[in-house]
Length: 162
Image 1 (cartoon, rainbow, N blue to C red):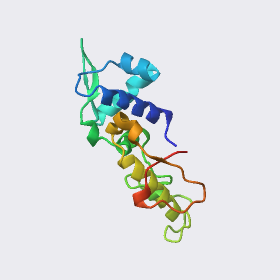
Image 2 (spheres, rainbow, N blue to C red):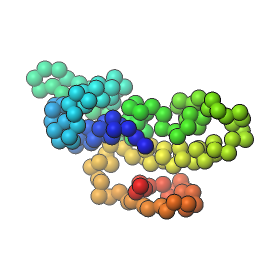
Image 3 (cartoon, rainbow, N blue to C red):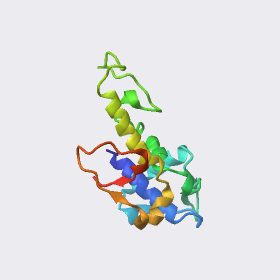
């Protein structure tokens, strides 16, 4: 599950994607449009700026804007900046690997292969969803997957309703 902070970051980036190429956007505008507490939003935007996704301009006419074309920013990048690892357990993380402290042998661990599949399914969605997706929401295909259904193949990874 993503954090409320990550959800707010994605909502703010949606607004900045809509305004891409039009100049800086005021924090107060984003806050009002997406119902995000202004102080919380300031911290989120600063974090995204410090990681090179946004840039800011001070003074009259200032605000925040995307530093990178929205087609080149995907949700995996945003979630890693805001929430850290995407993997459900640290032993399957691609960027933040840590051996699980309760695991004696990763090779024979029954949970690890399942967690790898969960990670890969999530990454398939996050890495293939750019900020431009927010401009074409009606074109997204939503698939429902029943609990206990077979694994989703790489070609079947789409947005799944939860």
